[in-house]
Length: 192
View 1 (spheres, one colour):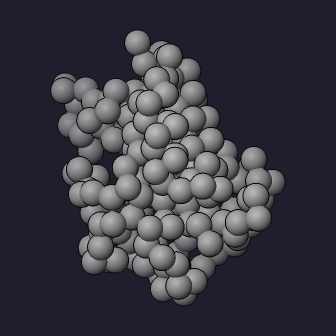
View 2: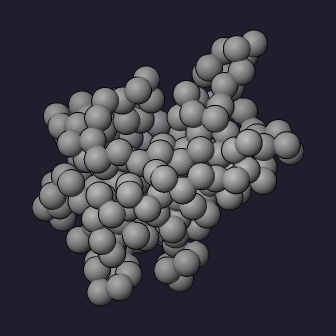
């Protein structure tokens, strides 16, 4: 079984904010796999489905970003998932808008959802995919990540979400190394 976790905040007011790109990627994967994220367990919306003969668990924690680890840990324990089979998708202010970067493990990079997962699992050896949302030095980071994308950034983030969806599905059917080799070297033409 492979697990794909998209990070974000629950509620309509956060739906299209920069901080919710992880949720947006999960929504696109769910559409592709023709599943609805309506099931609720462990403070999360989830769907159990299949892709290329591989079981897939899609998760959107509903605990707010800073407590995402609680839901992820509960699913990992319940389904007895290997930590290297859990891909976490999150926003990253240190990457330009539309950039997609995949790593096999690492620190939290200041992202509080990742920090919560690392603390809850007591392990940072899980793959993660970061989607760049850029930053604005004139706006406090907390306010910036909870803001919506300006119209000029929408094409870049839309393309990044498509790339992230394809990369996540490749992770399901192959492994993190193949996924990184394919997508970390693939420039997003909208990043110029």
